[in-house]
Length: 202
Figure 1: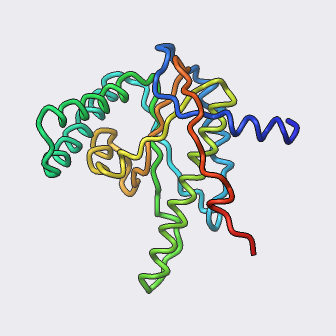
Figure 2 (figure 1 turned 90 degrees about the horizontal axis):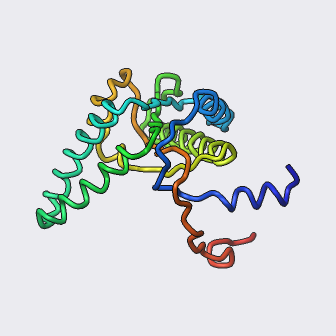
């Protein structure tokens, strides 16, 4: 792909929240996941792990358990019951309506270890960044295959609920969830801050 076409392709990706009901074919899913593992990672540790959810029953269990945690958080915030119910149900329906969920987790098993907290924290942050880069690669690969995705940070707020609902292997730390499917509605581009506002040259 010529450079200008690639740049246009990157700019054309959108966060899609409405999907057609059709399933994502296994071959397309494998291609998307196969592209994601070519993301860069600190020390080439490749700490990303993927939990792919297609089962309606498991999606329901995940949505219910995450919803219960979300409800408790909103109650602690002091929101009105009707506001809480609306927010929880909106989040729940987004999960249930997506044909495919991809939960990205961090596995710290192969990370370097250090005796001091500062370097240990830096190592963990590098691993988080690596998982995020795999997520971006996955989203662009999905876009190339005609799929839409949206990144949900909700697993960060309910890691125990996600781990329990999906019976994740010990050590897997949920970082994000991609709702994935063929778009039913592609939103218009949202504005971006100008480079002059966010860039310094030295």
